[in-house]
Length: 229
Image 1: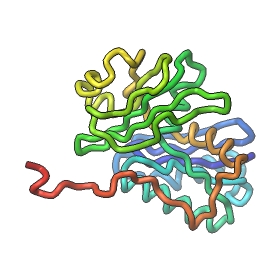
Image 2 (image 1 turned 90 degrees about the vertical axis):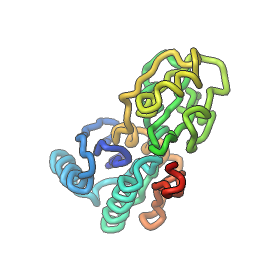
Image 3 (image 1 turned 135 degrees about the vertical axis):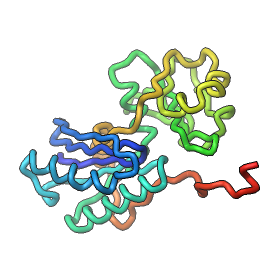
Image 4 (image 1 turned 120 degrees about the vertical axis):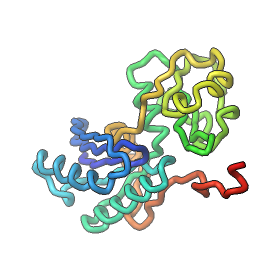
């Protein structure tokens, strides 16, 4: 199986190529320059592997939640590349990819993922290890830090994502001693999007190019003047 994955949902831009379980990847702190970095990184990985797009089985993207602009860039790039090469696309939730990375080969039972959503909110979800991979205890949503989702089953959980740095105090109050470890430096990476996408592709969860949509969750990105008071 050959899957090309990319993620532009945060300030990082990452691309990964999964060739039958062998992964190669690139990642750069792109800031606001994802559109400049993404396609050259894709071309570089394909050239190194001696492949063209039409030789792939599928594309995969981090569909969100995350930066509105970043999600639109990923969606637009996936649609253009997939349509031109007649490839299916596998959307992967960014928070699930972060949890999969954090829980891989670890002793933890689950992960609380919190990503800074700005405006004093976080995108968050709770995942636990399951026989078939990961199970979502709490689906991705938008929360005030003081109301971030709690694990619903016993076990050792870790917390990961930029929310734990941006809202350290309210999240510490919210979780108390429920989290055994914090990893605020974690961000979605295309390698883990590719890993999850392989299983989702086998399970028939790929979509045609024109059906690819970002998972925004929030429906507004700015506060009105009266709301800032």
